[in-house]
Image (cartoon, rainbow, N blue to C red):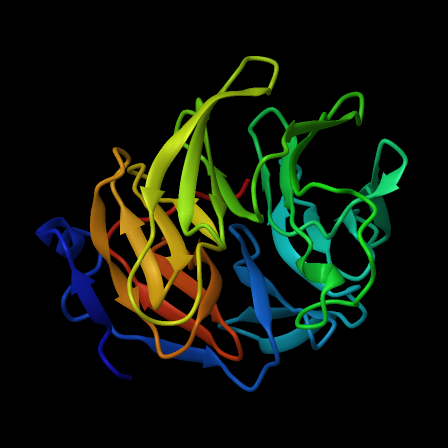
Length: 298
């Protein structure tokens, strides 16, 4: 396996990614990968092949299998607090949940009577509230089914776990994409792909967002813009962006990036110790081992 190529902007990056780390190819030959989600108890990874219209599953024991053959061009995936898979779909403009009996429940499809654009990435707060971004990518030919949007904005939403009420939180993004909470969930980070930036918001007790401000700008050479985003167990923030995976301190200081051979769209922490970083390249799933573990999805 080739060694990981790092752009080190702060020597603290070596405390996260060791100098002898290797970039492992886990699975290759796909069409457009996204949405990796690690099951911390069953020890497997589920991820989307958007253009392959499938949700795939991989584990050390079983290798690669098809979890769901017709995924409606699923993009982002995560788990709710009961361990049920949540997915954001490009082809159907919906957010869904796979129930324990493997039936699919639609959680969100419209806002004020109009179809959502194409839910993209998704995260669940500890109280069960679901937050997701809704850019128009799934209505475009590259990774979706071309069709006119019904909404004239690209929003960020919250789905209440008790009332199932869908609330529009933010509507002034160009194209909101990745999102994640801080360790104590007092902050929500949201990135904007065309603008190459990450914003951060205070999270109110009712789940609303306030005091939006710039957290960081992403730059560098290589393909890609801000996309999948998560924090580790020490609060460092990781964001797929130009040329690889960018890593920031919780205060916004840029530590550096893991360079990747191709554009990476998303990532998650996995393996038994949650120190495996699984990265979805466009056609290839990679893994890098880190020193600091991530957080379990539930």
